[in-house]
Image (cartoon, rainbow, N blue to C red; front, side, top):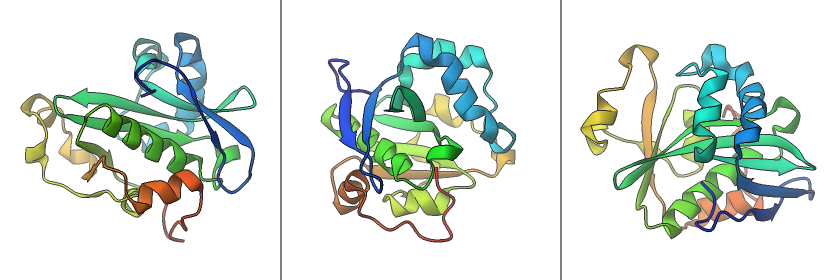
Length: 186
């Protein structure tokens, strides 16, 4: 979910001081998006095959560190809402604030694009997303066609937050927030 003109954003990597480039994924990134996401597939709410990433590369925002994709997340528009999905950071890059940087950047870009709220489903990282200001939400906020796709057997929780800037998003962008010790980090 890059800025509307498709240009990349550059940010300082929280906690390490290295340059991180946030940019829209390109079709050629699909194999790397799959490779990055594959380790979490056994625990994923939805299994995705390599062709998924080829078809949906345009929905992804990536963290590029020294020419390598270190993290990614997908954004799907749902009428007046947007849904974040497939939020992941490679094992080598975890603990450096890249998941927070990606998520906060996507939320703020959606705000600039006029989207008032963002949702996501999580089973294992609920505490981490709560740290970023997401709160449990009722499925009634989703469009009917999205509600119909929910697999209740997966045990995931719907979370929502407004896209307007707040101290939680700013802290994630700056890399100055403390992640709870018990949070599984993206």
